[in-house]
Length: 411
Ligand code: TYD
Image (cartoon, rainbow, N blue to C red; front, side):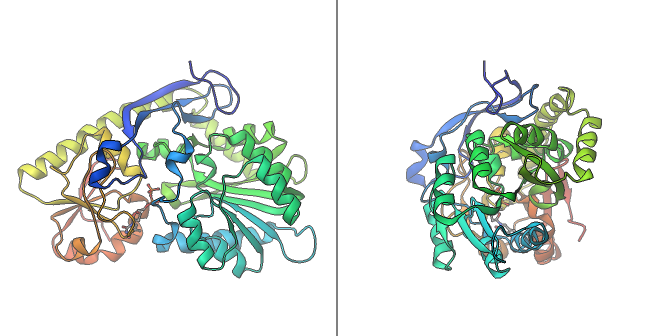
């Protein structure tokens, strides 16, 4: 019996994908035999409503000195983080002087730190993957290589004073020791400080059937109800929510020390909305599980049909999330000849588990396939806009969310 990582109640699994590889680990040919597999299953806690993985992968297997994801590879994300910093500004109340001290958890290659510094804040990044942290440091952005813990929070407060804000984008959902992180945040924050973080929003995942958000790095799938309960358990309070379009539909949550700031009416409205979707009952989760099986079969059948027609199919974007779809639907190089990606660290390697070759973007643009399977669907607008030439040359896009569809991007 598995227990909730946040409140220890018994959790209820609703999807089991079976054995899966690490989604952000792109092996070389020599590394195939050492690939690590684990059982990917997702459960809901009926007590605190936190949706979570049943089996965890050790964090040092996922975040290390050759972590493959660099946030700054997407132009859309660069402008998103600029907006995040702009929107944070009015909420900040520097506890001393005029400059706010902002700590970012999971600061990656400094994509947000650079905007924080440019906006005049004192920014410190905490990043466990040394190679991406090094990119930030090389840009002169103060970055500490470590996992954020309560112990580290105490040391940071000692060294730098309290933080006016702790921020995190796509990071909290990765951390299984979530109680320790929230304790750390609470002790690091100044009395009027805020913890502002965003992660994929569970109701959006359910609405799209975006089951490819389920992979080992995403331990938690938050919504306002589960975040409010989690915050309350650690002396914090959910005071605001703001939906954001990134990563297929995210929510930005603002937490403050309990009782320190008045909650926005948006919080109560969001909680009511979630209840109206039936999210406090098992039904929507069971519906997702049924949809997952159907989409995987349909995508595989579509690819087999294209193959039978002699069409060349190339994947677009070696995303971590595509690993779940590729491996669950049992897709391989016999159906998808390669996946193009702009990230040098992924090129020349292979997709996890299925071992589809990953090639530079130039191999897409120099020799368009008949069909591009959009794995980076969260960047669809940006990609469709820049790949008009592909469609002009007769290429078709294959997408699989919210349904399997083959055709033009409509751009
Ligand atoms: P990301 O959005 O982080 O998804 P995940 O968290 O599932 O990995 O990754 C996007 C990937 O797509 C990344 O490897 C970069 C790649 N990419 C391209 O190759 N071309 C593009 O135009 C964009 C926007 C992304």
